[in-house]
Structures are given as C-alpha cells and as structure tokens.
Image 1: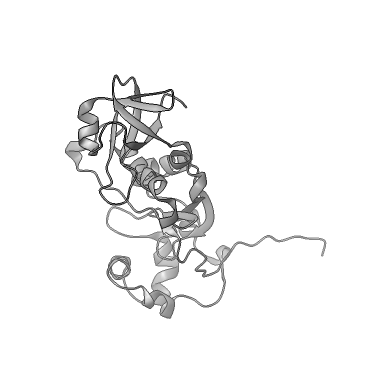
Image 2: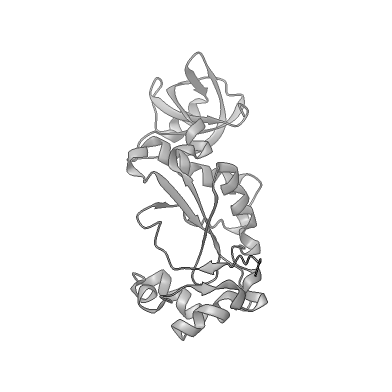
Length: 236
C-alpha cells in the first residue's frame, strides 16, 4: 500500500525494580522561601555522595500525573478503571499502603494501543501535575531524563539518571574542614550515613581545604580538620 503507520503502544513493565527512588518532598507553607526546596533536594544527593555503594547505580523519580482538583485522572478513567474497578483515589491509597501485588494481579496483560484511547487520556500521557513542574525542573537540572515509562494509574512520567551522573553528587568533593571565612554559597555535609547532616552555608574552598564558620562546623558535628563533603554553587 506504500504507507507507513507508527503506533504508540502501552506495555506493562517492571524495568526499574530494585532501583533507588527519589521520593517527594513536602515543605510547610511557612517555610516555602526561594532556595529551600532545591537545597532539600540536593541534600539527598549529598547523602548518596557520602556512601554511593549504599545506592543502586540507577536512580529514578516518579512524578505525579495530571489529576483534577476533585481527584479525577483522565488516564485512569480511560484505562485503569476498566481493569481495577475502583476509583482513582482508592487505587492510589492502596498503592501507598500495600505491597502493590494487586497491581500485578489486575493490570492489563496485553499491549494497549494509544490511538484507541480518548483524546483527554492521550494528552496527559507523560505529563506531570502542575504542582510538580518545579520538581521536574530540579530533577532535569540534576541530569534526570524522561525514561519513556509512565505510571499505570495517572500516566505521570518516570525520570531516571545514572547515580554517578547526578550533578550534585558528581560535583561534590571531600576535603578537610576548618573554621574560617566563608564566601560562596555551598552545601556542606557530614560524609557518613550515621549522623548524616547537611546544611546550606557560606564556605570557601582553597588549597584543598574547606573553610566555614565555627557555628557551621558545630551544626555538622565536625571538629576542625575532619573530612566534609562540599558542593559549591559559585563554582558552576
């Protein structure tokens, strides 16, 4: 017929089982000031830098898909409801409180052609909730990319990155820390899982050492000359 047809198909997969997952962060309204969300997000990657062997080489983050203010998911209404026979809110609650075996038991076992879905459902595949736009930007800044995988409930995107390619982790450095004048905005961390702490503070990195205020060292629980992790914003 001298024609070509490219069809989008949804297939159930578990390719990311066992990967390290970056979960959601929630900040109380009274603490939502510029930079806080980003600093908290980066603190997690500084923890990975403290003990990378404790984390999988692949890191993923699942973003919430498009859901209306009254809890209606266009994708769920077109796909999930037919197989799970429950409201989106009920399935979402079960997913958060069980081992998710019910998903494996009830999910469709055969490919679903995207072109057979209503336009409203097709439009939200791989799109994140408007409240998650900032989180997606932070993840992409760190080096996460869309993995062409979406959540079976709301079709929210799953982003992934190689652990060692995550920007904050990759750019962090270990060095002895001493009391001194801090100039650049930095993240400083105690480089151990036990007693891990991470703070945003002014610090200087020169001659293979980190200099920050005595108060910063006290908050981190580090003595002068102890090893610390540092990531400097001004260096990038």
